[in-house]
Image (tube, rainbow, N blue to C red; front, side):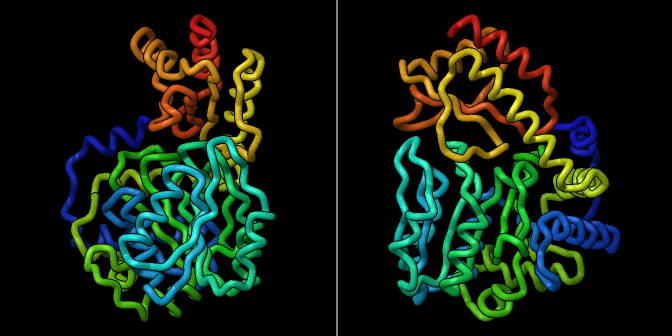
Length: 342
C-alpha cells in the first residue's frame, strides 16, 4: 500500500449519507469509467464486497436460466465463474485449460454460432498469471451476439483495458490489487447495452447482489447499503493520482516491473510458462517440487512474501506480484535472496 492510502485509512470515518460523500462518489464514477474507456452512458457501482461478490453480482444480474454461457476455466478463478453459474442454475459450458496450457483463438471455433448468449472470463487468471487476449474474445462475442463479462480484479491498471475497443460489456475489479488499497470494495462498469437489455430488466433472486439497485442509487452518488467508507476515501485519492498520470503510464509502469523481474529470474534459470503473461504477476515453475520450501525460506528468514499456490500446484508454482508500491530495487533484493536457496 502507498503511505497516502495508509494515512487515510487511519482517520476517523465520516458519516456517508451526505452531499459531500455523494460528490466524492460521483467523481470516483467519472474517473473509473474514464480509466476503462467505458462507452458513453455506462453505469457504475461500488460494492462493499470482495471481487468474488462482484463476480456473482455480475452473473446473477445479467444472466438467467434461459441463457447459455461460455466460461474460460483456466484456473481457480475461472472455475469460480463456473461455480456461480451452477449455483444460479444458468446453463454453461467451459473451455478448460490444464496447468501450463495456454489459451488459443482456435479453442473458440467449436462454439461459433451455437446459441451462446454470454462469455465469462478472468482477464488475468490470477492463479496462473495467464492473460487472455480480450480483443480475440471481444470479436468472438461481437460475431455471436454475446455479452462479454470480464473479471479484471488482477488486470485493472496492470494490463491494457479498453471497454470500447475490446467490446467489453461489463468489467469488474477490486480494491486490493493494483489499486493497492485495503480489501473489501469492488467496482463495476457496465455498458449501456448490457444495462438496458439485461440488468434493468432482470429480476434476480437477490437483494444485495442486484446491480440495478446500485445503479439507481449511484445516480445521486450513494450506495444502497452501508459502504466501506474508509476504502472509498482511499479510492478517491488513488484514482486522482491515476487520472493525473494517465492509464498508459500506469500500465507501462507495471509492464516495466514485470519485464525487469522476469529477465533476472530467467538469468537464474527459473522456469516460466510459455503462454501470454499478465503484468499483474509472474508465475515461477519449480519442477523439483520445492516451491513451498522456497516460499517459507523467503518469508521466515527475510520477511519477503511472495504468493504460494494451492492445490496440486502448491509444490510447483510461486507467483511474484508487480502491483502496488514496489520499486525495481525490491526485485533486486528478492533475486539476491532466492539465489541462496536455488
